[in-house]
Amino acid sequence: MYIGSTDSRGLHHLVYEVVDNAIDEALAGHCDRIEVTLHGDGSVSVSDNGRGIPVDTHEKYDRPALEVIMTVLHAGGKFDNKSYQVSGGLHGVGVSVVNALSRRLDVEIQRDGAVWRDRFEYGEPQEGTFERVRDLEADEDTGTTVRFWPDTDIFETDVFEFDTLETRLRELAFLNSEVEIRLVEEPRDDGTDGSESEADADDVEADDAGRRERSFRYDGGIREFARYLNETKTVLHDDVIYYADSADDIRIEVALQATEELQGSIHAFANNINTREGGTHLTGFKTALTRVINDYAREESLLADFDSLTGAD
Ligand code: 1YM
Image (cartoon, rainbow, N blue to C red; front, top):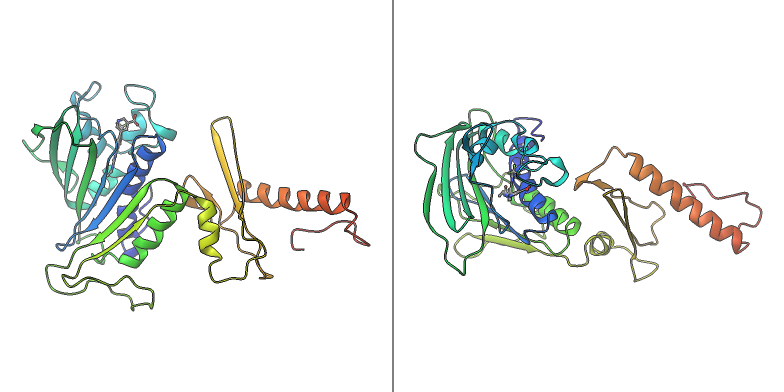
C-alpha cells in the first residue's frame, strides 16, 4: 500500500491501489477484464470481472467481510490462509486507505447469485447502506466495482490525468498478458476539459461528446513491451528473446531485443512495480547476461586479446 503524498502523484496512487486489487484477482486466474472510468463529477470507478469481494459475514469481526476489507487497514492480508486464498498475502490491503481518503466510496459486487451494494463516507460505513440489490441474472458476470470521490480537503488537486493513467495501465497490460484493461474518460460535468497538462501529438482525441477511451490487451506480454519500447529504434533482430521460469513460487520473465543504440535501457519490475532503484533481480540479470555472453565469446574464440567482457561492454 502506498499513497505517498497529497499532490497529483498521491491522487493517482488512489486509482493504482484499487486497480492492484483487480490485478491480484487476475493473477489468481479469476479475472480478465478491468475497466477504469473517470467520471464527469471527479469520481473514478474501477471494475473487474473477478469473483467479487466476499460479502459473507467475517467470523472474527461479526460484520460483512466487505465492510472489514473496506475499513480495516491490512484486512485483505489478514484473510490470509483462512476462508479466502489470498494471492501473495497482499490482496486488498490498500483499499481501506483509498476509502479513508475519499469523501464517498461506493462498492457494487456481483457474487453468490446476487448484486450487492455498500456505501462509505470518509472511510466510515453508512448506516443501512449494505444491501442485496437483486438476484444476479444467469448471463451476468461476477465482479467488483469500486467508485470513489477523493477527499478534496486532503488532496491538493482532484484532476486525474488521462495520459498518466494511460501510461500506467498500458504498462500493467504488458506485465499481465491476456488481461484487457480499458480506460474511459467521460466529459467533466463542469464543462472544463479537466487535464492540467499540455496536449501531446499522440494524445487520444475525445469524441464529439467529449469522451475518451483506450483499451489495452497484449497476449505477447513483455515481449510486446520490448517491441513497443523499441518502436522508434533500429533493432538488430526482429524476434524478441524471451525467457520464463519459476522456482519456489517465484515466477521470472525476461524479454530482450538488441538495437543500434550504444546505451541500452533496462526496465525491471517486481510484482508489477517498476523497481527504478534496482534490486537483486536486476543485479542477478545483469551478472547472468554478462556471464552468458562471456561463455559464448570464449567458446567461439571471439575475445581475441581480452580476458573477458564487462557489463559496460
Ligand atoms: C475494483 C477492485 O477489489 N476485486 C476483488 C477483490 C477481492 C477478491 C476478488 C477476492 C479474493 C479472494 C476471494 C481471495 C478481495 N478479496 C479480499 C479478501 N477489485 C477488487 N476481487 N474472493 C474474492 O483472495 O481468496 C480482499 S479484496 F480479503 F477477501 F481476500
